[in-house]
Image (tube, rainbow, N blue to C red; front, side, top):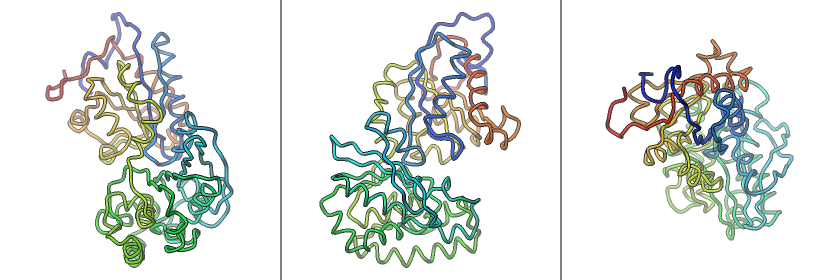
Length: 380
């Protein structure tokens, strides 16, 4: 990064305490948002023990969604459900009894983290969302009048068919949920089908090779006919329909809506007030790339911080954005754990310690009171 008044050598400078908001997303399957926030704060405190740290882990609906919300909305509940390849898994969810609202996380039931083996074309074809249906049923049994399903990190690309089947099929599921507010919490803006759909965009991340992607797309296209017919409109083409392997489309077909997962979490974690009181924002995720700037936690946080002229620092497993892209997004500096550790492998198997070390070094480089760049001015 180019030298500026914020990041660089602190030699010879007087440093006053800063109000630091630490608000990362999860780091893929290696660290939850809560674990990442703890690691960042630990490292930061080592270099700047007098700074006032506010810890507010975030989520866009993917892995860690339930754990983040549990810190403010209630204790985690646990249900034994079908995993993405049928083996049972223990999935955690949150029930806010006062608001009669259940917060579910599809990654707990059908995520890559509970797949049980490395993603491959075989798992991409077989993985399903049945466990999400089990969680929805558990929420209904608990008396939930509102069900919020965090979408992201899934191993399946079944368009939510497994979830729907577990609820009795499209007609029966719509009846069961007729008096319930159903919300898909996600920040994926893609439709179910096409070049920007579930199979083609996210299939390769789930182990699908080109031939498997074609099969998944064909399956989704056939299923989309049923979903759209049940919905009475083209739900499969809606923004967010492609989230979590197409579970978003199923939620819409069942009468639900799509809301920003990061905004839901931000609202319940008091993010707006924390930002208003911060001198600097430190956030992060597993891979900071172009997708991060389109509806993901970092993109949303950076936009809010920039509007308040609060400088943003990003710590990530890997960073794939260049200086102009960072500047355009309002990010003052981005550092990669892989570079600090010397390899992606070490950054993943020793993630907490590597993130602590990277945070320690970055905090030590702070010269003093940070200043955010004006929106259109170059940094020095």
